[in-house]
Image 1 (tube, rainbow, N blue to C red):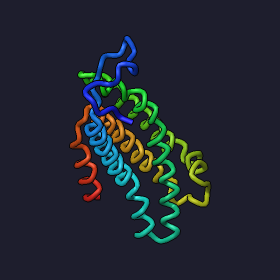
Image 2 (cartoon, one colour):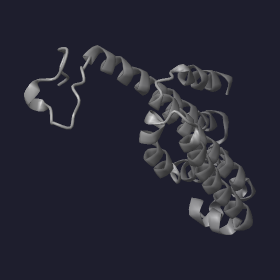
Image 3 (cartoon, helix red, strand yellow):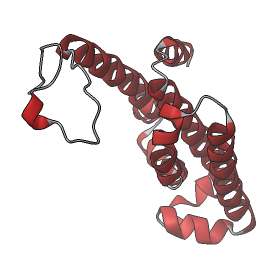
Image 4 (cartoon, one colour):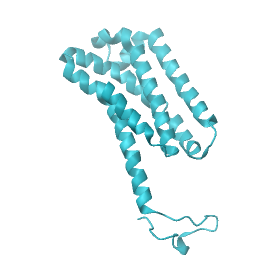
Length: 178
């Protein structure tokens, strides 16, 4: 439960902790804005899978879904970078943390893109084997998509850390355009 008074009860504070007022309405509003932004991101990063199921034949939809395994791997692979950088993003006034995190995510993405291009048979085994050979030459593009989504996730978390809510509008706009 959140304390709604002007300061937390005296017995709940440690000596090292400054007295901070808790405003339950502000916390709720921030939580709703963050949830809304994450929903927009989730919708954007999963819209292609839903559309593929509707627009493509069952076979092509399955092949596309196999490629999406690489997309999701590239999205989730650098997630630790965003998680580790988030506290610094919330407190840092300079862009150093943001730049380093973006470079690390881009480097991981570039490595996977190069790996799927140089070792397409290994990447194909990762997504389901020779049954999905139709997607073999497109796997670097799926890796690129996932890497872009990972960078977008960093930008989203950076915006949430700074309490900049305009990114939500951008995500919904991108979904509408897509």
